[in-house]
Image 1: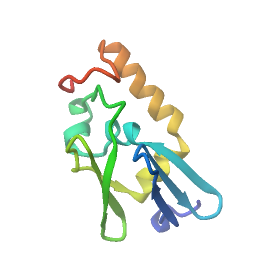
Image 2: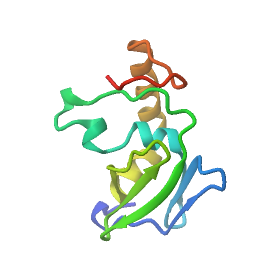
Image 3: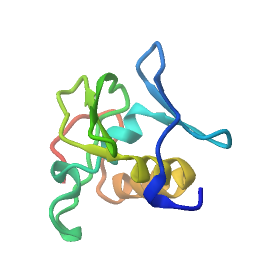
Length: 127
């Protein structure tokens, strides 16, 4: 997509098992984003903080599910998760970035877990 200001999904669909959000941008870009990745990479201040040094790693979310989505204007969606998290506003630009560069985002998260001795399966406070 050439102009990021005009990015807008043409389709957003949550899978029956609530574990995957499929987002399409036009006819060429379609991404299946796992609920776990959306939860732990949430753009919320709770996860990202208000500065880069405040960002936290959220463990134990392998089984998290998407329970709802709420549109926010014409630029984003609020994703609601079954663990109660609902404060992240996923802009169209951020969703496109997650889809196009998923491996980098996900491998970075997995490396953070390993560095901190945390697990995708064991819930504990973020750090």
